[in-house]
Image 1 (cartoon, each protein chain N blue to C red):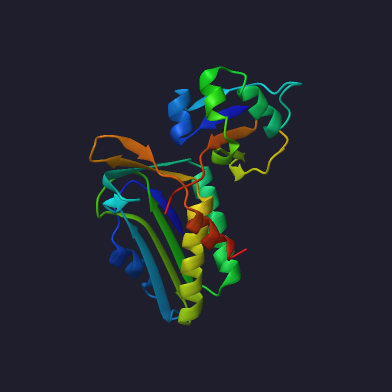
Image 2: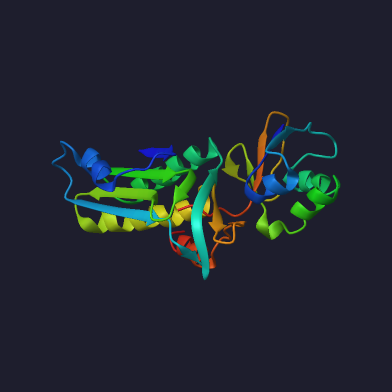
Length: 83
Length: 149
């Protein structure tokens, strides 16, 4: 699945997008976040406070525990501040 | 109609285009958001808007459809700019048109409140010290959006 990062998450991780395969370990947004936190200090920091990280799946705001499959587009970003 | 664009827009031109040839519209309301020189007490020298191409358009279309379902609108328009903007430039425009003013007023207010909390845009402010900061979400915006639930 395609993973996208925006705003300060993109800056702190130093990338805008990447591809990740679903696995036994990654089946929903909760398990994806848990896995993200194991990827090193930058990921650990970005995902340390989930109050400031929003998730979208296939371009819709996603409630926690949204199930994932290969081919999905998952985005992580801060609370929106347009207007 | 929704537009996500880098180019600056002219409110009068957009209003004229929306109402041209229409005799069924009795009221037009517009809201324009501008780049301010101060935010939370700190000087701002320029603003950059990042967005999520694809999701942005999808969410703005959903928000517009919701407004059209809740109020009797003859026409509506949302323009949101992205990229770098100078102080005083317009960022966002909402126009609503209805037979009588109440629907246009309420729908315009709703569109802005929902846009501010649901459309994936992020503001990066440059300050006079040369540093840039991502703008944080405001509780007042979240509360304003909740009143339409």
